[in-house]
Length: 190
Image 1 (tube, rainbow, N blue to C red):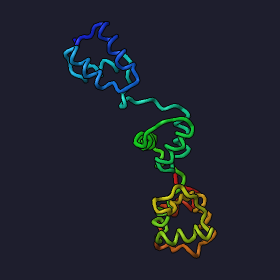
Image 2: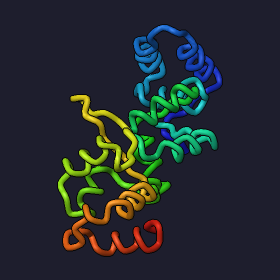
Image 3: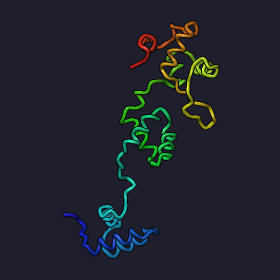
Image 4: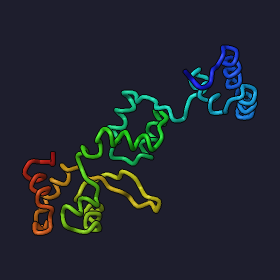
C-alpha cells in the first residue's frame, strides 16, 4: 500500500496544476501544503498521471538514430549530436557516448587516428601529419580542436596502400609488429 493516497479529485487538481504553461513550482508547493504531503510526492503522482515527463526517463532509440550513430561513430559526440539534431532527433552527449560504448562501435572502426597510426609505425605524430599534408597518406578530418588543428582519421586500406607504396619510409624495427603483419598480410585488422 502506498504511503500517500490520492483521490480522483486530487488527481484532477494535479493535472490542472501541471497543465498551466507558466512556472508550476509555486502552485505545486501550495498543492503540497493543501494535501499535507511533500512536493516530491505530488511530482511522482504527476509523473504517474502523465502530466509531466521526467528528464531522467530514457527514450528508446529509433532505428534511424541507431543507423546515424553507426554511420558517424568515428566523429566526436558533439558532431554526432549536431547531425542527429539536423535530422530532427534530440540526444544528450552523454547518451551518445553511452550508445557508442554499448554498441561497441569504437572498437569496430576500420581505421585509426593519426596519433595511433604514428604509434603503430613507430614514428612521431609530425611525421604522419607531414605525409597527410603532402597527400601521400590519405586521411580525412573528423573534427578540429579549439585551436583549429585538424584531427585525422586514416582508413586501414589507405594506410596499407601507403605502406606498400613507400616501403623505404617504414623502419620495420620500430613498427608494432602484430598490427603491421595483420595489416599488410591480410589487408586489414579484424
